Length: 361
Image 1: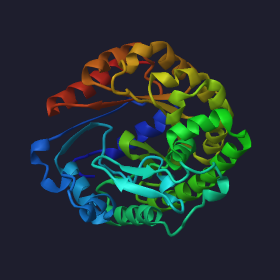
Image 2: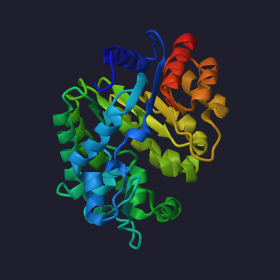
Image 3: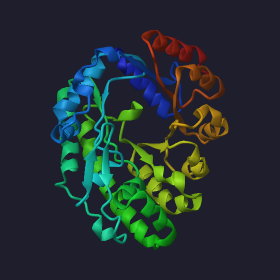
Image 4: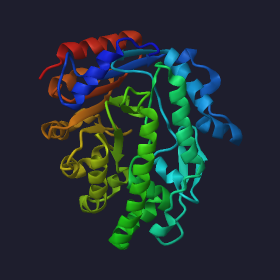
């Protein structure tokens, strides 16, 4: 791999992580990129045609990734990973009639049912949709060009209710939870679930051989030795647990049956009210806590973090270098994965040594 030695050892740590075991230390992903050496290809274009190419041209995407890989110092269990990224809850982009826009940091979807009644018959998978074909094209191209230099992620097709919010509009969907027939919302979610299952399996079949039989989540730098994907329900930060139980639980339960290594992306402190529900889902392997902008560090919510570990779930935390010592001190190293951004090579090495020294049962 580019700028990465002894990845076989990292794979062994990841395998142990999923079993909540420790080989020599807990997993830690930390790296530093020399931004001064990155080329102009990372600048978001001004003209519409190039904006589309920026996101959907596999050669352009690979060029940007390779530029980052070659100028990055990888420490701990960090590794070069290309991200098949065509929008969050991206299976919304595979529907007939969906509209999308290219932004500097993401692809956004415009609602198609915002001025109509909620109708599951209008949620139709389009195998010829531009973004679906581009997702498969991107995954194939990145795998064909890899030659052992990097891994290729699964696409961000996570959260059926979040995808429904793209289609319906978040405000409208929140009102639907209160006023619409439950069966109508469930029927819409079921249509999106079928699309999610098909397209995730399609992508896994493409990337698994490139990833030594496993799969990865791009933005989390994870690897698992099988079918691995992200679960989420970000819109749940605005709903009660009763609504979450009614509409999110069935989705999470089903997806944990489909995936070998399911991870739940917990979107900050507002989702603590759903934590007992999440922890009760059979088969869920890991919970990743996002440190939402403007919220306290996840380490300020130790009772919730310890509850996750006591429920025998792996825990992934994105924290800053100066928070690593506290995390290692107060949390079990079993099933713990720390993701850290460094400001220098020396900081990368210092944090890895700290984790080695502080790993404990």
